[in-house]
Image (cartoon, rainbow, N blue to C red; front, side, top):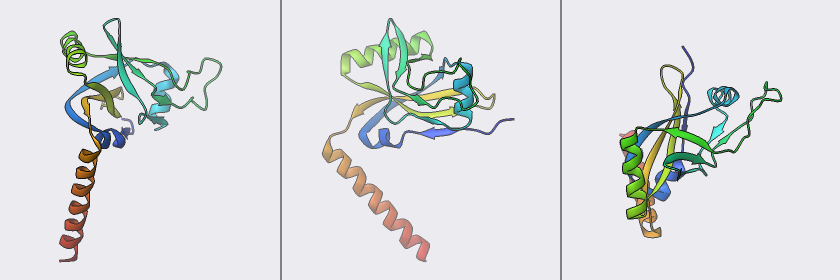
Length: 150
């Protein structure tokens, strides 16, 4: 039906330890979904925040639609995320009690063409944790090179 969109937040996997993931729907305007389907979005600097028991994605960048008119959307605005009540309550509890944060990991379209945002309940990594992940990536890369040569 449609070309699938898959926009990753690679920086989040490096800076944060992901504890749990959820898939949320996004409330979008008409021109926003058109820009997402063209792949003109960025979620590397975004985060999620609670406001009146509702979850919002803050600082997500969706480029203005090129063929839009005066009803075009703002490129950086708060976008409401759609989750079950049970999921919202558990996320709110863990963010308040344990000091965790919610970070968007992936923006994609499903088979129906609707935009979804995969969010993760994350804990920030220390610098030595980041060094460990870099070492793991280097060793994996070296092993792959060795396997490829044989």
